Length: 318
Length: 185
Image (tube, rainbow over all chains, first blue to last red; front, top):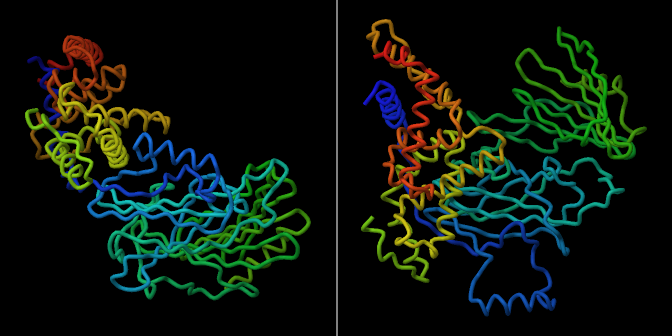
């Protein structure tokens, strides 16, 4: 064995020794959930569906079965809304809450505005729960009618929808994974859900509170109010940076800065979407305590407040 | 593997689960290592999960006569990791980041520090191998698979594996330099 071989063997040996113990192999369980890329079956009387059922019976195979790894397994499909919908895509979710101790069910909030789908096109949501590698995964798929090229969502963004899903075991305190982006969320008791604690600026109602669980529970408040016409103003606050809805492909914009008082400087930006007439104006600032605020106004041109109006609102945030 | 022979394919779900678990369990550690090596520590769990789902789906088609379970399962992990890095448009493994840092200690013997330096240089040199060469070096030296299993896993002859290994070593030797290697001895 020459020196290179010794080096390779030693490197390989060291690498193997530094690998963590693999998590135990869990039992393989199957479910009867319909694959998410298939639209929900609505009318079983349709001839082509009947033919498909006959064919399936003939070949004796079940194709709509998902097999996943898990110690105990729960899977379900649930739907909101109705319609001969087509699959639009996966949707992120957050705010997993166990409503009572020991319950094998949780509530999650699905925000279609954050997904790469047209929020107003979504007519149904389907959930699938599976356990793999010791982690419970939750997948939410959106169905609906794809918008025609000349159509845009008239209302920018939608409030999150609550979905109740069954889980393989009592989930409070456990981590569950969103298959949309692999993010992990901690399931909280309803009583532990963080509430907006900061005073609201004039005219705002609490819309939702999101929390992230990467290291500790941190909250992001979303407050909103309608402006005249097709417009909505939202205020986000979070300990770190915050993510806001996008109006789509930006067609350019401007970025300026303005003093907020107390040595804080705000960044003001405007973006226009390729969707007809949609404009987004953002005022973003960071306080000395590290909290980031973003005031986002989004809607059709002519209804969205000007940057100076937004700046005045931002300065009124307690 | 002797235990792979006669794996039943029961229609009954619980028997199928038991048979699948019995098939996978002996190879679980090496499958984890393979997933970590081929797709990196961050993605390995996802790759492994997808690979096991693939294996479960095609379990009924698995024929022990065509190859042992380890090679079959490893080839599924390999295919999954390939699909994965293709889908995310990135290299399969960032070797420099995949190799844990070693804290330097002034009391450490100089030979240990030389070894760590040499391994870092080796990882850099491995980046310049072809993907096939790198894969086989990974499987042979890092996942510690014998040539025979690598050949089964990649559906090629043992001679091909050996010649690819030889080519890879020659390339590494050329890149690192004989003088360098001897100096590290």
